[in-house]
Image (cartoon, rainbow, N blue to C red; front, side, top):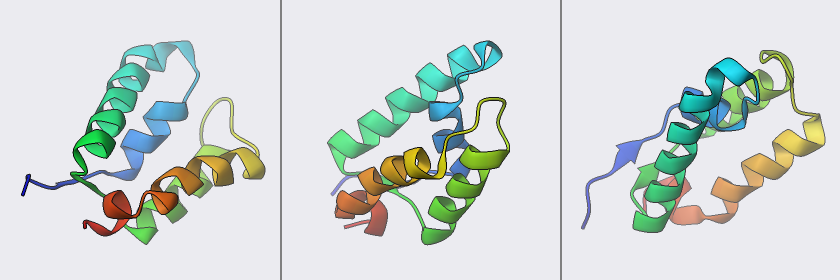
Length: 86
C-alpha cells in the first residue's frame, strides 16, 4: 500500500487560478493532483470540497461560475479512492 497524502484546499484553488502570477503554483498543483489520482494516494475531505467551492467562486481574481466549480468538484467525488482514502 502506498503512502497517503492529504490534499489541502489551496492545491485545488491553485490548480484553477488563471491569474498570471499563479502560473508556477497552478502547474505544480495540477501535477500533484494528477500524480495522486494516478497513484490512488490522495485523500481529501468534504470540508476541502466545501472550501474549494467558496474559494473558487468568490475569492480568486477570475472566479468560476457555480456550475464550473461543481464540475471540478465532481472529479474527486467520482474518483472515490482519492476522496475517501481507499
